[in-house]
Amino acid sequence: MAARPRQESRHSNSQGLGKDLLAISAMSPQAIALLLEFARKLKALRRRGARYQPLGGMTLGLLFEKPSTRTRVSFETGMHQLGGQSLFLSLDNIQLSRGETIADTAAVLSRYLDALVVRTFDHTIVEDWARHATIPVINGLTDLCHPCQALSDLLTIQERKGRLKGVKLAYVGDGNNVANSLIEAAAKTGMAISVGCPGDHRPDQGVLDQAREDAARTGATIEVTDQPQVAVKDADVVYTDVWVSMGHEREQDHLLKVLAPYQLNERLLKGAKPDALVMHCLPAHRGQEITAGALDGPQSVILDQAENRLHMQKAILVELLKPRTKGKRS
Ligand code: CP
Ligand code: NVA
Image (cartoon, rainbow, N blue to C red; front, top):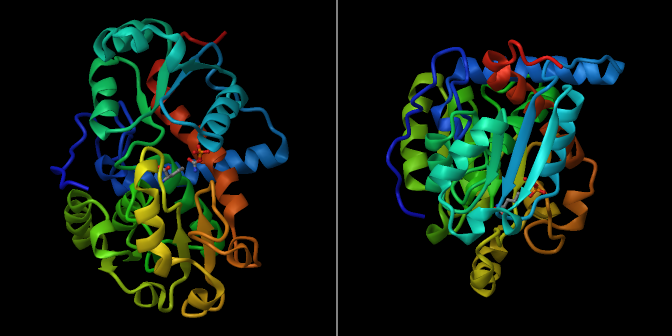
């Protein structure tokens, strides 16, 4: 992936989230800590069956250019649980597919909706949406990053390990969007991240450069190696993701070949700590990036990860929509 310039949010400040949530790189450690605390509270409320509906009368739009199970369902369900409603916008059925611009569509949707989740290809597209929308825009995955996934994963790691600072997270496989967001998340929270990937499938250089600057402030460490055994050594968490990300189908044969030595299997897992968590954002391909034994074994926390998407994204929605809730209650 090409190097990207350092990203600065126009809107972020030391405590709050700012207008949009596009990348973890633009968030402050304090904002991440607050989201984690809030997500834990929302999860506890849900467990107790308590109603919490601060987003009554509000509508979340979801505009997805790629398939999704978890992101779509957790955002739609989360918005409903918070008292609001959601609207899934299929690209085929809106005028964007007939050449209406993002600028016009974003401006119009801002008059109807209260927030918009966008899943797309190039990261500059979600930045365009955010620039032209007056409502909050949330990145539901781009080719560059998947911030909602990594923020939810922080919640899972914190729940299981009791802390984030100093926890070693090993990521093995393709240095893709999920890897990029995990690097950013680790850098902001003082974790030790080690990425084991082939030399030509490293994480984004711009992401690494900024993460190293953040790491200097938080005490995080960031390692990239082409030796998966080095990456997983004494790890508290071992994470992998698909070898063929959405939009990369044409590279499938090459990817399956070069990534084969990076499979997360029982042998590789032996190099990590005995109580290491096995993580995968899903969807998974058993027999490719991970064996069934590792994915479905006792160390796996994949369903907690999937569930925590709901709680974390509810926290994100409430935080982003907080300034807009006045006068919106139905
Ligand atoms: N992990 C994740 O984002 O899953 P979906 O593609 O199903 O949304
Ligand atoms: N890296 C994967 C993540 C899917 C949730 C992809 O972009 O397809």
